Length: 189
Image 1 (cartoon, one colour):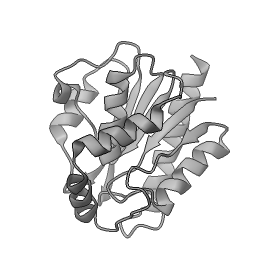
Image 2 (cartoon, rainbow, N blue to C red):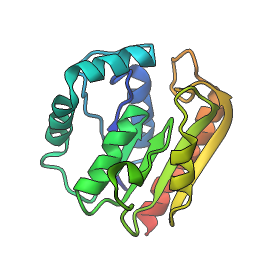
Image 3 (cartoon, rainbow, N blue to C red):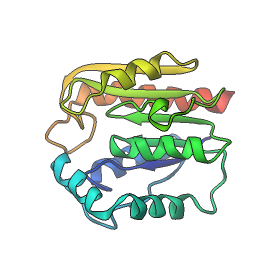
């Protein structure tokens, strides 16, 4: 089974983030869920983004480095929204990644003026109507070998987060199934 580091979104390490990680654990995976906000959670994405910005990029980077220190490099890196950026950074900074998945958005390797590592599969999941959607990043990611980008016909940013006002049960079930299939394929490789 896969060993995963799953970075939370701007809402922090919410019950919904923990629930998703628990679903992956129930499938047999080892999942680490670092709390980059040290217990703070936010319902509004904008409030969480403002909090992350108030911490500054170095504080967040240090917390990410602390979270992966001592873990093997052969990890699957996952992230939700803001956490997707942290997951992608780890793929670039720690050679050996087995794969990456991004919830609530896609990241583009060009943001780091880099290319995605060969042989590292990646998946992204995005709502069709989302004020935070970055179509250009989706298109860049979708054009890479081994990449899958799924756009769900729903409205809202955190559409698969249980307990969140934007939650869509059907889309969440499909997203979760696709992530579990992705992880199973990594295990089989």
